[in-house]
Image (cartoon, rainbow, N blue to C red; front, side):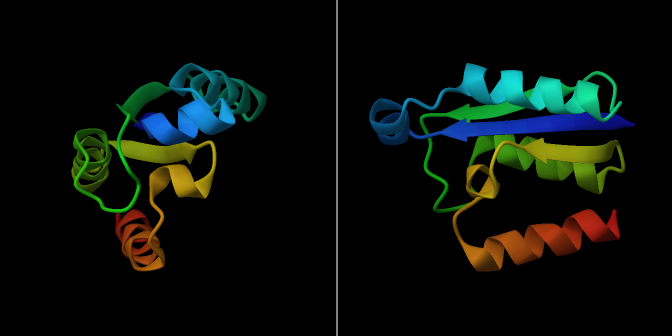
Length: 98
């Protein structure tokens, strides 16, 4: 079973806030180590908005979850996963199901 780390940053956010895929990845690796989650597989969507779920990396995460290959999905902040509450609830239901 995999532990996936999903990272996303829009170009605008990275420019304004200084967030980066690498920074998120470092934090998630440290979290996984602290909580004995083993190696993580990082999937990212650099430069893409969180306003919809039509992102290649996110679709890869969701497909892996549906296939039963994932034990944990880590994100630096919930808004990295998506910005829409309805999408968050749908993903939560999907994660609980699988």
